[in-house]
Structures are given as structure tokens and as C-alpha cells.
Length: 130
Image (cartoon, rainbow, N blue to C red; front, side):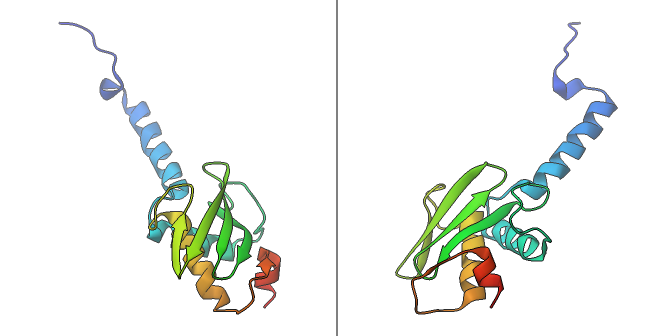
């Protein structure tokens, strides 16, 4: 019989490591609208809304122009993400989707700010002062 050292046949300790790894990454996984909403709530309640650490914030708001676009920073991807809003429909230019976590986060920002008629660019500090 051949000795197979695949990860499928690993010891119990490796299994515990995999469970811990999956649990840690579950928090940073941002793929669905619901995960974007969760990331928004986490960011909104965080003490340091500018922190680009994935343990502090899965997604961070960088810039916001009401009814136009939202610039986010995804701490898992280490990238700036642009979510455009055209005729009221958000679209993530990074994911090329309208139902990813970035869109979920951007929709929450739009709801928080209401429909301001200005197209003035705002930062997180500007928005949270209101």
C-alpha cells in the first residue's frame, strides 16, 4: 500500500488549523451583498474608521459622491475599489458585478447619507459629522 501524504490525510492538528484559518478568513471574505452590509456595520461601529487593517475593517470608505460613485478600500484585496452609480444602479468596477460586497457597502453609504442633491465629494469624516 502506497503512503499518501496529501492534506486530506493530515493529522488532527492540521484539521484544527484549517478550521481556525477558515474562521479567520470568513470575517474578511467579502463577496455578497450581505457581507458588504456586515462590513459596513463593522466599519460604522469601529473606533478607527480610517484603519486599513483587515482585523479592524474589512472595507473602508475613502471617498463618496452621492448618486455618482463611492471609492472604497478592500483590506483583503489591498485595493481601492470604485463603485459607480448610474441612474440609481450601483456597479462595482473591480468585480464587474452589481451584487458584490462592495456594492452592498456602497448602498449602505447611500442610505446613510440620504439623497443629498449636491455632487460634492465627501470623506468618511464629512459624512459622519452629519
